[in-house]
Amino acid sequence: MPFDITMPIQFHGILSTIGWFDLIDILIVAAILYKIYVMLKDTRAITLVKGVLVLLALTMVCSWFELHVISWLLQKAVTLLFVALPIVFQPELRRALEHLGQGTFFGTAALLNDEQARSVVNELTKAVKQLSATKTGALLVIERDMGLNDISATGIQIDGLITADFLLNVFIVNTPLHDGAAVIRGNRLIAAGCLLPLTENRTLSTELGTRHRAAIGISEQCDALVVVVSEETGTISVAENGHIIRHLDVETLKAVLMPVFASPDAGIKDMVRNWRKKR
Image 1 (spheres, rainbow, N blue to C red):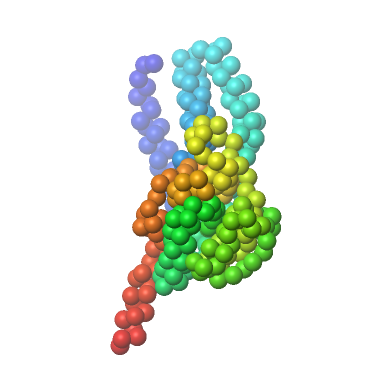
Image 2 (cartoon, rainbow, N blue to C red):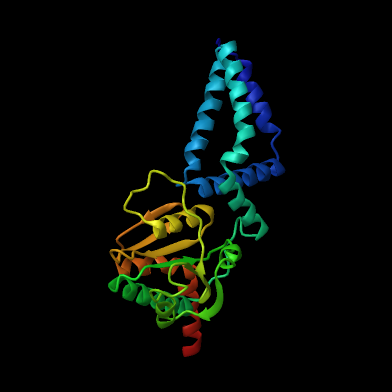
């Protein structure tokens, strides 16, 4: 295509028409697109997004070179694909709508202060360590921004303050609550014996049993962090965003759990509070 000298002039003319409201509009759209990317990152949906972008790029290239037949086929394929997107991205769309409904699309839920967070994490890790040592199966679902009332409704409502002894009693073998999941909100255990959806991921290792697949399944549908203790080996695992990390030790688990309960500036707030008390 021959170089058109009027193109730089036209580009300069377009830039001269951009005002402050246009810049604000662009920044808002960029923020929304970045938030969508963060939500899709490390999920199976990101692969589908890349496929859609490749199709769009091919359509533009074929239009540029005036390949009419291929362009027509790609345009029809892209049209059909956009019709199918709500079905393909159903879990991600549900997660985004739940964030919007709870007002947490750009924010986070209320978190515990540093002292409360450390207390909860210590009690949790103490219980998980004991469950791992005795090879007692356990499944702990820690709620974040997205509410888990629909999950907790499938089990027994408890609403008790979290302690290690309390959690150990919940997961006593051959009791009604042992095989289900315990749902944690803040520093309270709100329900136990809950049912979780199993993952449909067929690429997982055959070593993973029903408990681990349930942990991955719920983490695919919401932003919860799930702690799993294997009944066969006592292995400690953590599931998040459809991925599972296995063979964690207690110190690593504590490091993973702490940011879930405490805000990043919680330590600074407590330091300032202690300094004021000393004065």
